[in-house]
Amino acid sequence: MKSNKLIILIVFALFFASCENELDIDPKQREDANVTLSTEAGVTNVLRGTYSIAANGNAYGGRILLYADLLGVTGVTATTDFRWRGTFGELRQMYIKSMLASNVIIDGTYSRCYQIINASNTVIDNIDKVKDPDKRAIMIGEANFLKSLAYFDLVRFFAKPYESGKANTQLGVVIRPNAIYDFSVDLSKERSTVDEVYKVIIDGLNLAYANLPEENSFYADKYSAKALLARVYLQQGNYAAARDAAHDVIENSGHGLSNKYADAFNHDTDQTEDVFAIQITKQTGVNDAVTFYASEDNGGRGGDFSIRDAYLAKFTDPNDDRAKFNYVNPANDRLLTLKYTDQFADVGIIRLAEMYLIRAEANFQAGTAIGNTPLDDINILRTRANAENLTAVTLDDILLERQLELAMEGFLIHDIKRTKGSIDISDEADGTSLIPFDADELVFPIPIAEMDANKLITQNPGYGQ
Image (tube, rainbow, N blue to C red; front, side, top):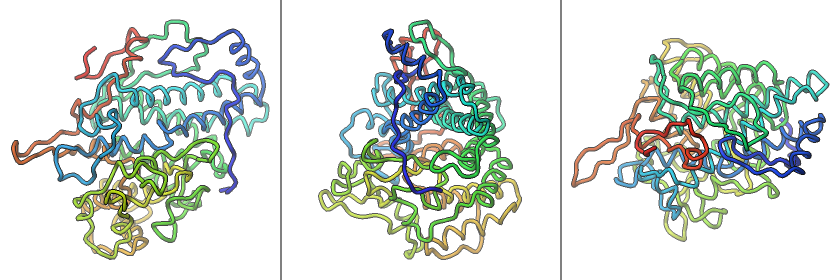
């Protein structure tokens, strides 16, 4: 992949607002939008602007990773792996499992994801302005990848989890199949089912895979789409499809594992392990994962999210590089991850190590050995980390390896939900107490702004109407 970086500019006069919130557009802005969408250059700039929207801190610039960790731990007990000590009340609501529909941070992420979807739909709706068929296909592929990525996180955070073997008719999120240009009309619409949303995601990623090239600089390429498909299929419990998608990426993408575990993090140009990363520059913003996970000296807030002894105890080999991939913030003695120490580093969304873990788990669940045995795939990662190889693996071993390899990268609550786990909120006074994977308090509320604007939408249980 090319190492040069494009500073993404949004030159489109209509800065997309969520299709779930009204936006007043004066006549000049409407005229500018019409002019922009009448040219190939204008439609191309909308696509580049979509990446810029995705790079915002309250989307894939870092916070979506943080949310998965905050929902997966609790402030009630010291038995969980990580701790939140930040002063953001809206984020603390996720940590203590007491979210409000008025939470402005949740509202911001909801709106941002729909901005990504609306901008992507705008590219697709106006793709006829692009005359070169090869360029047209690539742009269709990128737009479908980006909106599938946004829908996937919307449905995972704002809906009850997908459960393999069930109809999944529980409410998902609103599907917007076409671009919205006029926000003054009534856009009310009920949420589609979780199953219907997953179908949109999978169809979009398959279309992206078919249209995208194998190499596409730092933009989404064919194997970005296939890697995200592997993640989606794993979330569904579709192990054969997850296995095959992950295997395709491992064998055919040209990506490889970094020589050292540390080399997979803190870089501002794509490295061999990056299947897809969000580009951050000094001109476009900062890495918001750094904001919440790093010390002040490394560009963060001092380590709002820190490591507890319970996580370190999961490492049985003292030579495992991943067990030592942390540092103590001298300002407050908090133990912090070394994964986020450069405020202008790219935000890794998919790296190849995850594909090995998906293939291992999916092969184990399916009783197959496509590409490799589960044991060998796990030992490839352990060898890279200088950890002693295992002689056999169970499903629990594979799931533990995910925690050792991917901790604080945006997987925690999603793995708890797909494996039907729970969160321990026990204390000495009340005894054992667990929050189950499908609890109401592990689902984000539909924001008040959306409830006010959308007359047909249903609120999630536990948040009123």
